[in-house]
Image (cartoon, rainbow, N blue to C red):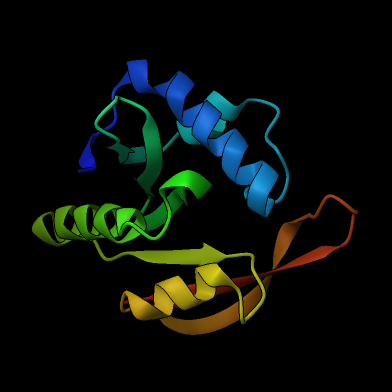
Length: 148
């Protein structure tokens, strides 16, 4: 069984390893960060959780940053086990208990797995904008904004 718990500083190396596996499989994040620990623990971070497998391996991560659900990922090996749903449930329950309204952004195409996941977990697409940063090819990136 996967345990979802608050992230600790000691989890960050495992989170970076999990993020690397996700990036290699899915190109998330779209641009690999120069400082992955800083990307996972940015200024303005309110709270973060990890999904930990029984053997102690980090299988997923989610954060809340300035009213936004962010940094959600699940390793390819842990998918189809409701890990992402458990992480989102933990974060949204915390937000509801603290009167925090959440939104999120997705850089994926409309029919991507991430878009399908957010729709299945109750998120509604509100609008699409262009990011103020570029993709790995230097081209513009469209951001799909979701709310609950």
